[in-house]
Length: 505
Image (cartoon, rainbow, N blue to C red; front, side, top):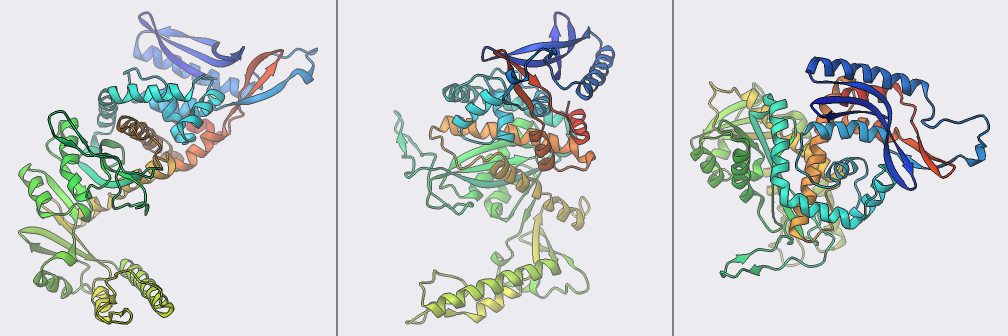
């Protein structure tokens, strides 16, 4: 059972409804009509009454169907599950996005991506069995084609919601890049258009952040707000260097947000003179990670002579830009540990006579076998615990502590990538048409957005988004059959599940 809020003529109608399965077809069934109203205050009163009535029903009812004393229990059979809380809570959060552009099955595909991130074939079966929607894999593919043709309208509606609901999170745009690999053997071939121009294939081998350089991939650039909610994305061919994606990503983000006063936060992979100059020409502020070992020998010497015992934060001017350099003992210990493990591994390979790839810690100048290059190991140890940040924010606009704090917020985009990859499983990707690859990414973007909103709603309950989804996924209604008719047995919600439902609906 769930509360349905719908338009009825010139009013808003509030009802409690459920779903029953009749002759293999799911149909909506009215449980209780609460009332209709036109004014916001009256609607709010009806919603409150509906929530109270629904809670009472869940506490007091065991079955939606009515059993008479002479009903043989042998005729009652459980035939499936209905993911009631998932549809009620995640569906309600999806509805908040205000997507009015018609795309078949989009709402359910987004919910399924969160609780059951599988192939489209498995998704079709899951939706048919667990959400009362009869659909086939081919229908989902056609829906993805519709989504691709209308994705800009869909994303514009979502951005309108996130920017209006969370305006304080828009001052900084966090940008990063990841790779998505495909279960395929061959790269996409370049094609030549009628006018003679060459269009690069999308799926190509390149540097893989998933350590799957043996498979074709695409490069995904993602811009998020300070809460990790996606704002824009770009899909690049798999052989694209990540540093070359920044300008296009920021330009598109500025276009869709209609904003000019933004601070771009990105990691050191985006740091290049061309990128920084382009951001400065656009009068954009930036905070990026610094590649300290790529600086001139003179500037490196200045950094290495800084006294971090007296203070852990120093400021320098390098290439007419503000460079903030910090030291962390824990970061130093971690770097030392990783280096020692790397050296120990190299020693074992050398002792076994195993072929060793080129490594900065090895000297290949000898004719018989490589040996450790102690000078390189000692040089690397000098940088343990030292990290730099480049910004064009002046000290009067933002002190060093705030610069570091905003750069640290990049973990939000890293978390969003983790949600993309681990939770909604954006890869491995099995689609090969570029249009469906993009539609697949859009579905995953919408799923991540819903998860980020869920995160905001359940945080006061002391829950992580992972824990909340776990609770949501366990609250399933049972589908039972009696005399060739299917009925829904509501789940017995725990106190925590009821709190999640109240927070999300």
